[in-house]
Image (cartoon, rainbow over all chains, first blue to last red; front, top):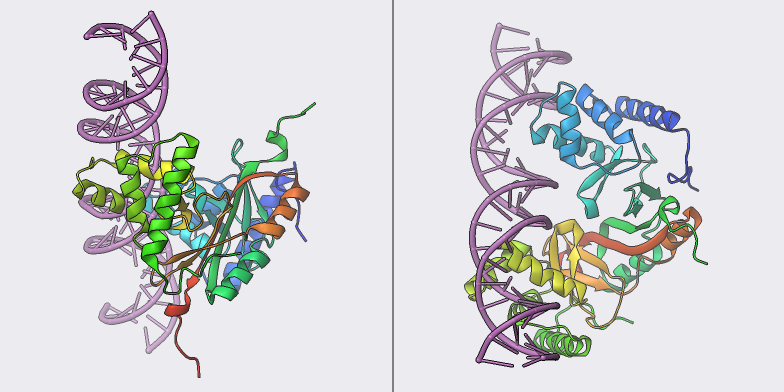
Length: 160
Length: 160
DNA sequence: AGCTGTGATGTTATACTATTACAAGGCCTC
DNA sequence: GAGGCCTTGTAATAGTATAACATCACAGCT
């Protein structure tokens, strides 16, 4: 069952603080470090529910006094992805904060082509693909499921 | 209902000639041109069921006497994708020939991380995602569904 | 034939995305 | 305080993709 819609207005400040709290706790539990760059990177991604390119993140980090070279951003982003605090959107070559951090899941996304908002759907890749794979003898290790389209707010208001 | 498995050995020559014949016919029917670069690009993709990067395709085109600059390859590849004769694999930033050319479909892929073979599953994105989208009010226009893993031939032969 | 519109190809230049390799610092344990 | 390990920083480069412009081929028209 989903948390909330991501497209709809919501209490984003609590959205952010919850995610950071979960990340702090998960890192402590796993014995990995949510260092300043990494934490700041997560904060930047959390600012809104849209995907950001690595270089946009990098620019933000640089103005915050961190290193300004690509590996600085890529390392932090890859760390967040590895730990499940962020996801990479293949279609956009970009990154979003995870909407369900701390919980292992096979993410699926809905990407609005107008406003860039990315919402996460819980399960989705599901049945059809797993069935095809089974019948082909293919062993799935990881899935990418991304839908592009229009979010509720960006759809033409009326048809008649 | 699928055609054949793509992972299994098959009569690839007929696979190729069928695809080219279908492409020729579809272009004629639609009033678009399968020009020499475009046709050659499709032939190159059809050589095997693996994804190729645009620059690899470009290198092949160049040795065949076509232009050697990126737009030459990207334009031909985008044409093939637009016409449904090839697909872009987002995960790999690469392209494959379509396994069901001429038929409109929402493709889903199984990508072997060892041998690079890409097989197409017929339907897959399906139910879960469409349901999430409907409940969120999101209007899907296009889907990306890509599974990575091991094809039958690349799986460790035995466990015990 | 000459004109014109359209679509295809080619090139230049540049933008965007990502990684490899190496240097330096912190911190922990022994 | 020496050796390991992890993290950060930088330099250099690799890989992917597009914008902008010039040219050519061809169809349709006069």
